[in-house]
Image (cartoon, rainbow, N blue to C red; front, side, top):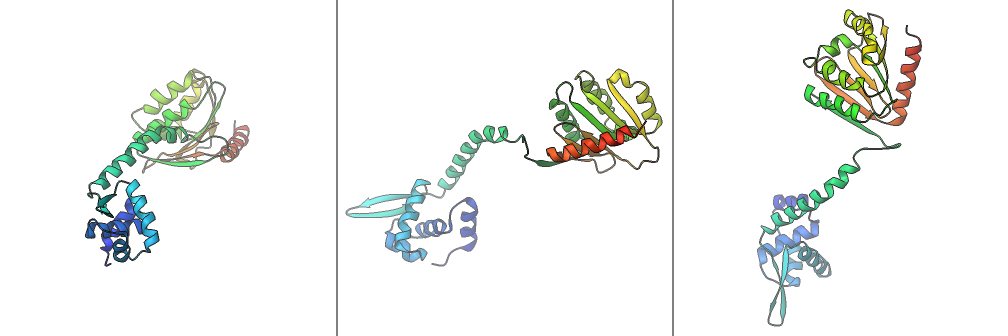
Length: 249
């Protein structure tokens, strides 16, 4: 049989096995026919064709027809392929809630996620707070002058104000600047403790460390953030932060 290779490959991408695709294409050309003819036309062993036809019947792509004393095998209309796809969508829609439930990784499992664009990053900062409970640590190393200048005051008026009443241990290391010094004057108003890094520190990110996430947000274009959920990496960054914190006034 000379297969239409493009259709054959598409059927395989759709989910059929190679033998299944070959037998189904043969049946479309032959119509109601015998296993023997399907075997010859598809160039697949007769004993194998029985198994393949049975599998295609279960998928709703072939059917048996009784003609006198003969059993013939015929393809269902190709539109059944669409029905099969709809069936898969239905199964996926039922399975999706369970898959989403497993999406939030715990214990020693890890994930790395990438966010691009200010809207996605604002949502990320909302998610950071949702994970936290009273007395959790919230550490950050940042160029707060650049951080506060992004997003129409979103980070100060939304993220910081939401953070105030969570009862967190908030330690912040800011690159020294007039903005950072002003924040330090009012640190008690925000339930945070701030220490200043040298003015010439070449830091253009907001790095947040919590018990659940390590977030690195690039404060210059292109706006992007990387989120690591890995306990070993979080622990290392937490300890490095505390070493730097203890060496900073």
